[in-house]
Image (cartoon, rainbow, N blue to C red):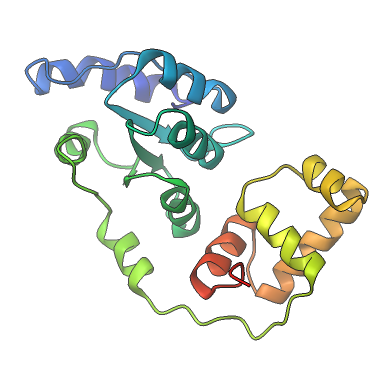
Length: 202
């Protein structure tokens, strides 16, 4: 599931040749909203999901695929170096993460390992996961926790506004204030901090 046609085309050409026909691309889409339905229909062994697809985005696509087709192994991919979206994808159900900055030939061994049941992560991401994360010294109220849960679930602003019975503008203001309190710069980082520090457990 990728919105870069050249990258997808490269895998389509390379996989059958380099794996002696063991692996091939059976379908692709640049639309995150249809990724789960396509996966359910085609039933591949492995689904590659670009985390930076247009809304609703790759993380929600990972979660939807895991929910609708749980036997499919999901691999998140990204051209960015920020570990927060990758961590969010792993929490959403991805079995591995691979950087799109790699040459196509370099992707094949880890993809085959994932097909064999292994989980694969770059060393940098593994170090980020093992790095101790301290809980922010904040005491969130009930509304802030509801907002944080919605953010961690990848909910859209309009959906959060409906749930909290406020305007979309108010949700944006509340989100900005919450990010400042958690000392993070975006929603993905907020979800990562919340997951590691247990802010959603109470």
